[in-house]
Length: 429
Image (tube, rainbow, N blue to C red; front, side, top):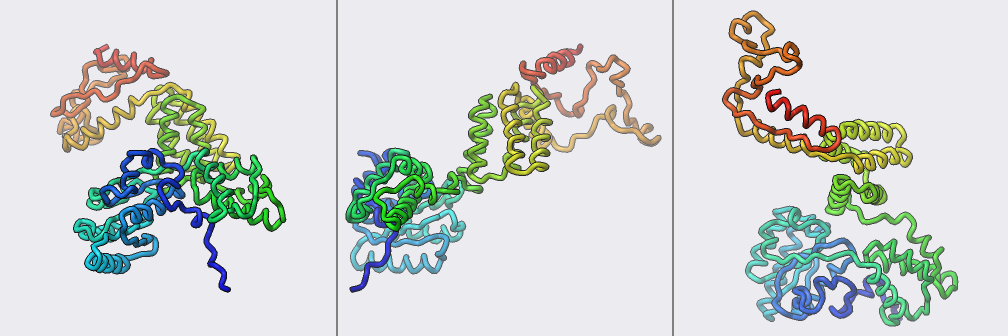
């Protein structure tokens, strides 16, 4: 008698109906649009955007099943235009023979380039295909606008702790698809560790549980212990895509925490990025930018402190050098804040780009030669040091340009004094 082929636990536990689905209540709750689609209402193309292990593939299958449609699946990692054309031909035949629609699930749609994504458009437009794309990346940036306009985007979220624990309970008690026939129990500490190591990913959780169950069975044990769970969960990293949304979202969270003067949240996001595998030097360079953009002249020492921290990291390496970067992050978080230079710089750049090549006023021109002096270079220039350090009323903008006010120091930190001096000079004093 031939044994049944092996199927991973994660595949066996895949929900067969929407009521079996764990999590995603924000889109699958009663009356929610995606729930209605899975109940057979108004079939349409969709894009499922969310982290790994949140049920995108399962939802695509449930959409096809609810509509009584044929189901085709491709991975953008492996498929090409030839594979798409073959799917289209089968879909045309199905439509002609039975009138049934075809749901095409394209996993990792963001890995297809614009030309490949364009291949779908006429067949989505004429109803030959109902497109279901899955992506871990922001579809606003990664999916062709024409395709995006023909689909509704549903955002999926990582599973919560209670979601993951519910999945563990279901799997351990399911005698048909899960591990119920083994009669295993899960120690509370092991349960907590597996849920934490899964990091919101149902597939990862079930893979870890399956491995732990194998260890328990091999040892003749009835319980999955903390030691068994630890042996499988070691080295697991938090979700952090070095080129994707999680990367930029966490950089944004760090930057906004520093700007918001919260040293604790700033340290948390800094450590989250390191824990996820971010390059400490990259994080340090972003922190250096914060020193100019958000602290500025309210505390000019911030720029030097971050520069010194980067030098310390380059000398010490990881993990010792990371403490110097942490010190810099905390310093910037508690420092007085000013974006006055940042705002002034952007405004000045805009004028420099839009006003054209206005000539330098004669008084401000360099006159190193006799000819230049004869041509009037430098005529009328007043040497500030001869007038007490400031030649009041002297113009420095091009003659054709109305003088601008870009820099407005804030009443915080060192810029309190800078503000007083700037306002005094602008007033002619």
